Each structure stands twice: as structure tokens, then as C-alpha cells.
Amino acid sequence: MIPYQRHFLDNGLEVIIHEDHTSKIAVFNLLYKVGSRFEKTGKTGLAHFFEHLMFGSSANVPEFDRALERAGGSCNAFTSPDITNYYMTLPSSNLETAFWLESDRMLQLTLTEKTVETQRKVVIEEYKQRYLNQPYGDIWHHLRNLAFDVHPYRWPTIGENLADIEGYVHEDIWEFYKRHYHPGNAILVVAGNVNPKEVMNLAEKWFGPIPRGKVTNDIIPSEPVQRGRKEKVLERKVPTHALYKAFKMPARGQEGYLEADLISDLLGFGKSSILEKRLVRGGNDFASIGAYITGSVDPGLLVFSGKMSEGITASHAEASLNEVIQEFLSLEISENQLQKIKNQSEAMKSYESIQLLNRAMNLAYFAHLGNPDLYWEEFEKKSKIRPEQINNWANKLLQESQASVIHYQSIPS
Image (cartoon, rainbow, N blue to C red; front, side, top):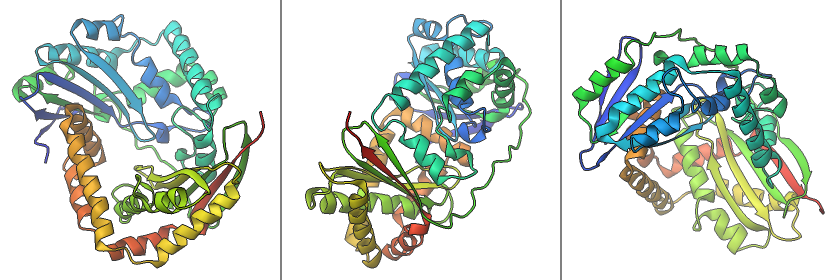
């Protein structure tokens, strides 16, 4: 367990404190409950765009990074389909600097035309470099769009297309900020060599006066049940053919989610996985292959992805993958197989918990799901899953009618 204290300010800000006096630093992690799943068609990518805008200036802070560096700190952030997360590390003696900086940009971010246009250029360049000019870089644009018909998971966090990013006007940006960036939509975790009473005093001092903001219940369209296999062929100038095959799976916290996670690990995680043994070391079709889940708040995807060996087409490789999957569905998983995967999961969680920043992020993320204790409750539930549960859920999930498949074909330069 990760020890913590949990409090709520009158304006709705959730404050979680994790003391660790073996550390000389403090971590300041602020999670906003907004990601690309809260966006609308034609205005996609705003959550990620704001991640960039937030490192500009605010009313009392001309340059966010420089002010933090003067206090001996560093910072970063990330955006996912479900959340946007900002984090800082700094000497615990300078903790108040983090409160000042983060509260100022929550209340009064400077959205000048110069700042907006500078960051727009940065994001457009990122889009081109990572998604258009990178081999296989556009796969998530196509795979998400193929797998989801109506849910906002059908576009990646950076945005559905360049036109959306190019088209944001001041009203779009300001409305997004006021709608999502306020205390009632945020979770603050302060961890490390800190005093809980001091942390709460600082929270009240710097965040307490900020208005609650209107918490809106965005209606996110539910994805309809998939009724048949979906397939798409892409032809690109890439090094080798590739295969991406995704199956629909339950949302995090729903029945079947943890089983799907274990299924992906059994089949495709690491050098001892079934797919690695059968299709890479024991076969000639794949140069590499793996499996993973998207781990999303709403129903997401269990994905198989692999690069082909020279001369092997994606369609031929998919037939080999299907053969292994069908064998997996017909076999009974042994206790030893399952326990090995659980042990790997436990080792990863233990390693993850060594880092103070990881602990802070996990407390914030699981608080966002409903309760920080879910971090360990989820692990405990996973440790008790039986082989027959894996078999049952594998047969429910790994059905062709639930598959979305992309054959990524290499063409000559």
C-alpha cells in the first residue's frame, strides 16, 4: 500500500499527500480530468494543445520553466485520451514555488495570440514529425478510426487531422480552458519530504481562492457493439510489412478488464511469451510481435502488433497469428503459466513503486478513477484470477467479429 492522506477544498480540488521522508525532494503532480475523449469532431487535439499552452505564461509568471528552474526544479506533462497530467520535482524546501506556479496558470493563463500561434506551430510540427514523416507513424490514426465508429477514442490525442489544429480560434481555446481547467476538475498529489499540515496550508493559500468552476457532465457517445470484422490495407514506404489486429475489450474497472490484461501478457509480453516463442523464435513469419491493452476509462482495445520477416505479407502473417490464437483458445492455461505472468506484474509494480514520481502519478490516476486505493485493489484482484477465468474471457474477446485489422504494406521507395 502507498500511505496517503486525502482532503477536499471547498472549491472541489482534491488534495492527496504522500509522505516519504527518505527522499530529499518533493513531487507536485496535478491531474486534470480531461483528455481527447472530451473533444468534439472538428475540434480534436485541444487537450494536447493545452498541454503546450500551459507552459507559456500566466498573469504573474512570464516564463514557467525559468521560474521553476530558479527554484531547482524540473517539470513535464503528458496527455492521454482520458487525462492531462502535469508534474514537477523540486527541493522540498522550495515547495511553495510549485503551488504559486501551478495555481497561477490554473486561474489566469495568458492566452495571447503570440503564445497560441507559437504553440500551434510547435504542435503542427510535432504532428508532421511523429505521425506523418515517421515510419508507421500514422497507424493509430487509422487503427482508432477503424475500430471506433462514434466514440472519441477514434482519434489520437494529438488530433484527428492537421486542419483541426490549424482551425482553432480564440473562442475555442478560451472555452476549453474555462470548461476544464479549474479546481473542481483537478486532483493534486504532493509527495516526498513534506509536512501534511504545511501542504494543506499551502493548498488553501494558493488554490483555495480559485473559483470552483462549473463541472459539466459531458455526454460521451457509447460505442455500439461491433458486429463484424473490420479490415483496412495501407500502402506506405516503410522498411517492412506490418500487421495490427485489435479486439474490443472492457473498460478499466469493468468485469473482464484484468483478464484481458493478463491475456495480452500471456500471449505477447516479453521474450517468454507464447507469440514470441511460436512466431518469432519458432517461426519465419514475424521479425517481432507483441500484445498490449490500451487501458482506457471507457471500453478499449487489446492489440496485437508485429513486423513481418522479409518477403512475408501481412495477410500471410495474420493467418499464422490466428492459428496461435485459436490454439490458445482451445488450451487450458496452467497455474504455472498464469503465476509466472502474475509474478512479472508484481515485480513491475514493485519496481514502479520505487520512484516517488510514479507513486504520486498512480495516486492521482486512481483517485481520478474513484479512489486511490484502487491501485492496490486492482492488483489484489488480478492476483486472484483463476486459469478458467482467463479461458472464458479469451473466448469472449478474441472473436473475429470483434477484430479491427490493418495490413500495413511496404511499397518500394
